[in-house]
Length: 113
Length: 269
Image (cartoon, rainbow over all chains, first blue to last red; front, side, top):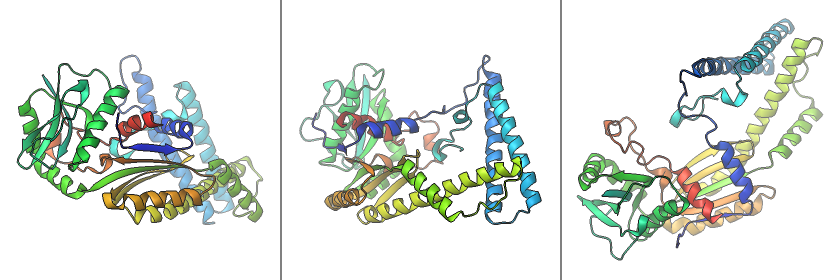
């Protein structure tokens, strides 16, 4: 071989490890078949709920950061987010789904979350 | 007979000197107007990408790069007959020409940077604790404690991203001076601060390499990977909305070849 291209690094194992992490842990397509259709559907629905939950949480954090929530509102938001998180944990457990599975590959746009 | 395609070149002339590709077959140019598709003949389809077949593909492209501007075709792009190649050339001719003009005398370099994310996070946490900023929510209920915990995590991530942007901007400003185009991906993992590809004029490649050496020596504690020069795998642009792509088996002809690049690079590592 007379390749001109070179890869220079003092830490090859660490880069391989990081690149492996970025390799598709997510399927490019939704894998739905008669045997797993329930889980596939749950995965899709829970992914969307998780996206909304994260958006809600982020918005709440922005408002806390901006000091625009009263003590009472913080109390209510805290209760809502905590219940939502607990419910999600419960549903993930029921359908045997891990956190990293709740995502969708949007092709050239990357991952949903 | 199967025609295995390596790349599109800015010439309709036959290739001087023998270049051997997959299965040791001699490669040749199929001309269309003033450009050409470089192919070799296979007796049977290649079942899977192996290290040697990917390297053979890459080697042909690199040899072509010595004499031509090359649009590297994705590994394992095959046609059943010469007419198929010509039909594809006809469909994409304008796009090929535009890309060949844009990429003339340019090569691609890859840079990956791992940063000490744990140390960075610890530093942020310590700084936040000292300044005790924004954690004034009294922890008199589980709901408020929950919010406070979430808020601390939110601020940690925010600061983490700020620091990542600061480092990336500093590096990119330096590399960017010598690059015509670039594609940067930030924090693909917590540790992988930067995964970038730069398109560099051939006569600027030494400056680019020097810039890399400078950045590397200025960032102790960071880990760097430099690769190249590559054919411009990541800089070939084809119109996504074109009907040309829909009914063609060459749908992802020039799909981002980062995996291909990694596969080739893996041998060198």
